[in-house]
Image (cartoon, rainbow, N blue to C red; front, side):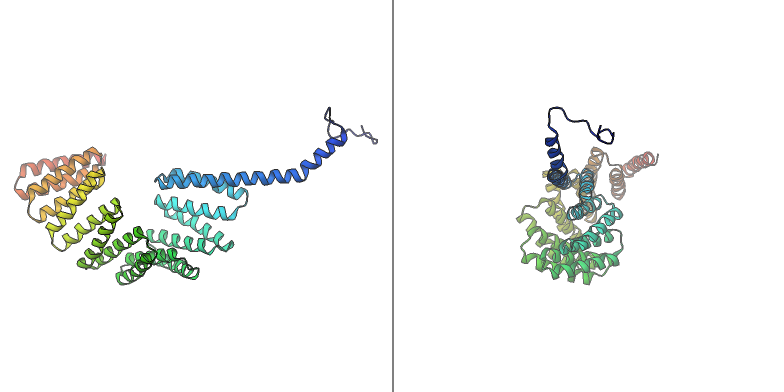
Length: 363
């Protein structure tokens, strides 16, 4: 009890003199607490950064939902320690995860928050990226005018800060937006500018993507010979850099363009190459798609026997991967081809099978 009769707030710690207890209390309330707080924040920052890295790993492995969870945990920590740049970075990643999942409205929400932080922190590169991503999300929502508005802002920033890759992306994305609007002339103009820059920075994979985009734009215009020129350049590049996925995609494009020109034999050649590649890479989905395309091309040549052979193989694959929709399509194709051959009994059998699947799907 003190001189005024009050009880002390704390019981003395046995074995430690009063003056030493005072010294310890002072240190904990001053320098040591500050250091501990700083260490805690540094540990939290490191933890958040690790979570972001884990999220990116999941995203790159196409595990987008798992990546989303890591990013959300990191966001909570960045906000807790008031790390604005970290918060902005992870908001961008959250937007990308939602974008990959096809959740474009959610992606836009995250990108808008990222954009605000980029502006607040005067991070012009991040601002340009956020604007570009917003443009892409709005394009998928088919709000093409808003997509163009955002991409133009992104292009201005990329040119201002001399971000060549950002400029390439904005030009390409503007081309895609104008293509979606049906303005193929503007789409081609932007994508050709993008291709010139892409070649300047020697990004071979990006160059391949642009060659295919340009081929698609000319295809949409009905200029199939020019589309084929771009597709052939894309094919050569894909093979040069051993981009098997890109090779398979453009072989399909080449087959479609040749078919549109009425060159069914050449279309079949490209489809056969794509089929071989699909079998080599054990891609059953691409294999069944290509068998369907081959069947159609053989029908165009009047070779219904080979068409039926392709459709039967596609039917077997559809059952293997348990895809009712593809099974229905294959049975429908078989019915038409058998009918064209005059084999009405088989045509009726395939129609009956197709009706059974349709009934099961409906139920």
